[in-house]
Length: 117
Image 1 (cartoon, rainbow, N blue to C red):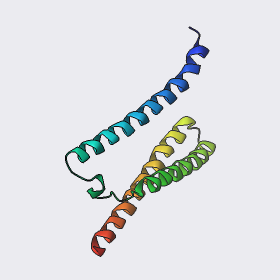
Image 2: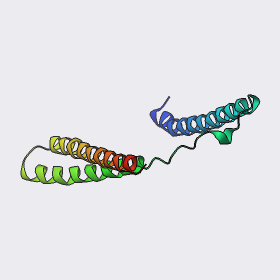
Image 3: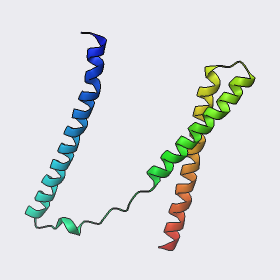
Image 4: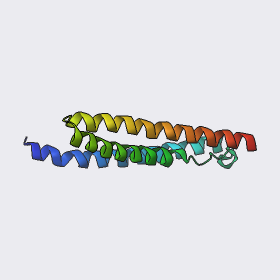
């Protein structure tokens, strides 16, 4: 097989896999609800899960950290002769700083929510 032929099938197989996964998740959710109804429980009686807003915050701060890492890596590369090392090291450092900052913000928000309850 040629490499181009295989490269075409990778996204196709990935899309099919995602669709099958979504179908099975929906199916098992439906089976679970039917089982609850058969046992006399109401699926509406389950407590609603709160919306988790930490994902977008974490993702945005990670991307901001990666962007800053690229900028600082470029300046280090321009002033020294470190080539790729400066980019990778700054990506990891600033990406980690972004994730650490998101953790601090999430903890502060959860403490404020627990105090108001």
